[in-house]
Length: 147
Image 1 (cartoon, one colour):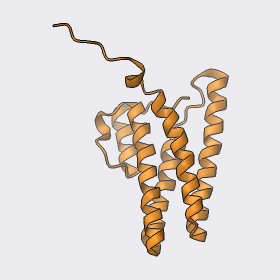
Image 2 (cartoon, helix red, strand yellow; image 1 turned 45 degrees about the vertical axis):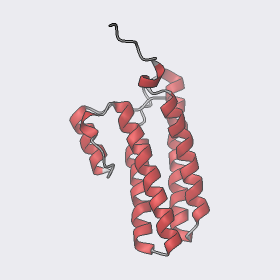
Image 3 (cartoon, one colour; image 1 turned 30 degrees about the horizontal axis):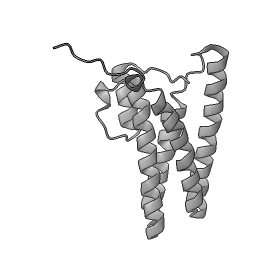
Image 4 (tube, helix red, strand yellow; image 1 turned 90 degrees about the horizontal axis):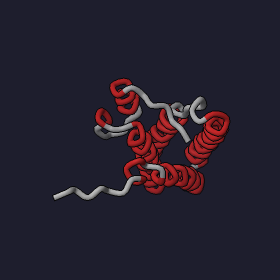
């Protein structure tokens, strides 16, 4: 799976615009994608909380934030040119999944449906979990420091 590698400043600006509260300026492209997953998850959890409390406006704002992160962060970051035909197919499938997640978030908002929000959260967590599995920092065992 491949995501575009935004230039440091431009990438950090994009992530900040999406409302992911972190220090994105010094993060690697891999970390930036992880931050987007965390931001979307947090927004969905906040929407679920506001839904349970009957607060319509903050629920809608949280869902809008999650949609923005999925559409303009995760989906927009997909790089269909990386990885040849397999990479293009994977990017296309992920793009379709993100479109489905957005539809579920919109349905959750429209129908006040917590199950729709839960489904969107589960789907994103599934992809986020796979993304964490390929974290370059986790792929290499720590090297002992010579004394």
